[in-house]
Amino acid sequence: GDSVTQMEGPVTLSEEAFLTINCTYTATGYPSLFWYVQYPGEGLQLLLKATKADDKGSNKGFEATYRKETTSFHLEKGSVQVSDSAVYFCALRGRRGSYIPTFGRGTSLIVHP
Amino acid sequence: NAGVTQTPKFQVLKTGQSMTLQCAQDMNHNSMYWYRQDPGMGLRLIYYSASEGTTDKGEVPNGYNVSRLNKREFSLRLESAAPSQTSVYFCAIHPRGDENTEAFFGQGTRLTVV
Image (cartoon, rainbow over all chains, first blue to last red; front, side, top):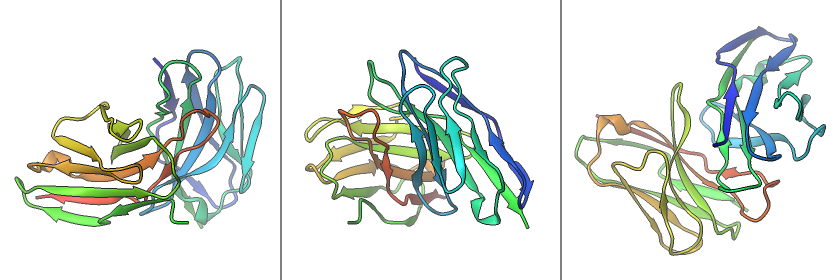
């Protein structure tokens, strides 16, 4: 079945540091890929997405590129802020079989001033 | 446009008590889901409903029941709460028919069973 693997956290950075959160997936065919963000005390919300190979999703300074050859969708940001502290989830939706999304376990990001 | 609304936001139960978590959506989607979120476990699917009148078990259905009351509402019931059900519960919509579309989540219900 489909699966998503994310790097374990927490990831702790100083403000203005570079961020990478790794995400790799296993799926039949070519799924759509998503990054969600969960701020403290809130539900998940979409951060960015990519729906086909080589697409780059971007939002709020975050970027992720759909890499079919490495089955990856790593999240990056060039300069993190304290307000980016949150939990980040990588997810996919397959195009065959079950339509139910598959989520990674989440990666907690803590940014210090 | 509220999207997905969950009630209550917080709840404390004693072991053995029952309660119903409510979820309502105003996005006119057929599919609705209940997840629980626990530290280190990510999101785990409890039950889902592909359309009004249908429900199916997810990964962790034991100890829960659901009701799809109409297209807008999908409730989750704990008949006899246990400390292992202490968690944060999320209701979500994953629109079907378009795999490119993202999910929409409620704000969560934080449940503590003592």
